Length: 200
Image: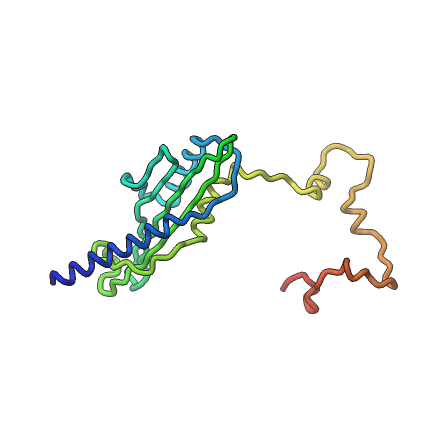
């Protein structure tokens, strides 16, 4: 019995160690204009929305913008359905009013077939990076800071001021085409022969 307990403890330690290694490999978002303290606060808020169990007080260093969540569990009574996830978010001050945000998310599966819903008896295996969850988290943190503007087509179509020239998008759409003249091969884009490049 004692050997089993030691084995389970060792397996748990190996699982945590591999998770820590994957959490050190952050995926970085693009640099954005923001003050450092404000971005750290936003990173905390958006991370807690997705990982509501809170932050690990032993690992989190808020003054350095380094946030580690505790494990968040998704419990199921079915075998191989109970999972846990953990995230790390780091805000880096690039200077000149710019920052960037790095995120890593890892997940594990419970391999206990007898009691799959009891966390205290879980055997955590398959430590994997969840790049999709990391991408969603970094996008939610940076959402307000990303610089975007409407396309020229949208601006032209939705303008409120009168213009002395016709809309270019309408001119291009109704322009005459010489069907007898072969197009220049450089101007022809490769199209799907069945769908004509319009997809399914």
